[in-house]
Length: 258
Image (cartoon, rainbow, N blue to C red):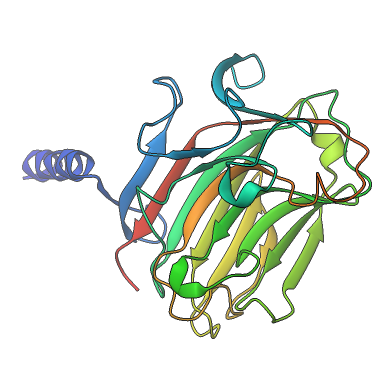
């Protein structure tokens, strides 16, 4: 009987792996795997690239011990035809998945800051964002991570004119030459009811914001962007002229239970 039960368990595990639906070992939560990239096959043709020509590429990285996404932009680049003409080098996942209100998502990715990276002391730069869709209207992203005054900074907001929740942590300069692993657990809701915004950095929680508004009202089309976004680069003083960052694998799960 024990042998029969063992075989049944193996068959069920194989079936779950083949269908892309898994059970978390600790929480028993079922999820759908929305996206998983290794960069080994290059840039996924389903993502949109918002960057100057050849600013984003897949390279062999010694730090990652394999393929990584390289994002490299210059202040002198021509951004006039790219997403509102604002300086950036980003890839956009909006054609693959969108964030639905009151649904829990888990996003895993990694970053590496080059050893010679000089941080801009005069203006911020954003390295990942969840941007609202058309129904959300114009305004800053409801979730973003950025470099500000030599620190990591997270902003969470529920409307364009509402003051964001701001979390400051870490020392990006100390992370140069390393791989930093990130995980975001995100359940969007503009009122904050049942909302989750938990950010882990190398396994340690750096942002915990239960039930704070983290999405725009009536927005079912928010989407993920990773890369470099420097909205003031060509309009305000800056003490850097080149930005290069590296990104590792990106995995996105959507949990099936509310």
